[in-house]
Length: 254
Image (tube, rainbow, N blue to C red; front, side, top):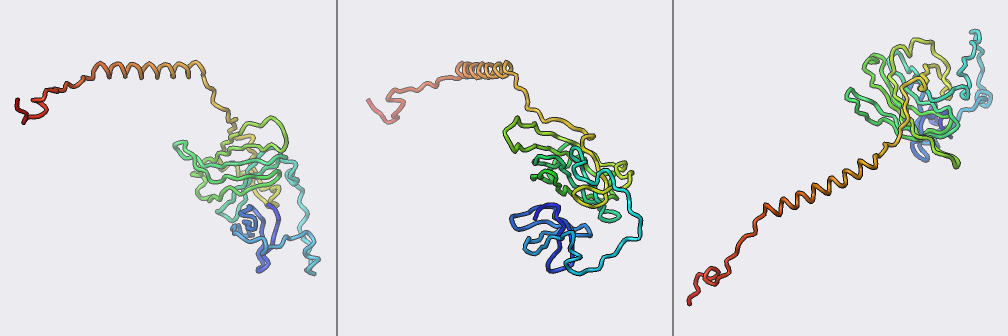
């Protein structure tokens, strides 16, 4: 069993899609009405394409004309990372991160507040050509949805020069919902796609160290320490101690 599999609960009639591996034997399943629940793998069965034949269930042909397939029908036609927004009802939406690339990635998703501070809402590994659910948002408050930032580190499956981490920031707005819904790869649901290659993108570069400035700071610190020690010695007064026996012992008599 893997992420993206359509499954059915053995002790019920609910069906859904595996959206997250919670443990070795525990997965998170998003059922048809949009709710995600943890379920043991032993209580699930993968729904196959010919399941209706196996259970002698009648097939009903749709009377509607077949719709033309969208360009996103096949997962390998997606280029670059994407966000997918799946409406659960008239108000609630699920937001997914899609990884159509050939490499596994490590993803950290953050929300950004008005002070440019960030809070992590997801941190996990997303396998090649897989997806992960990020969060849920209410359309009634779309104008107050905080921006999202994604820090992406590509794993090296073989010996090669590592790719520097990428950081992508995106603000979901009303304009992203103005287009018609399309078939979302991997999820097999209708929704909206946001290509992240059009969002604010930067490469996380290591900070350059100025060796000369670093040396100067060492020497400056040393000079300040020595100056402090000298001033401390000059200001300190050695106390005088009278060692005469008359002073030490007031009861002494000659």
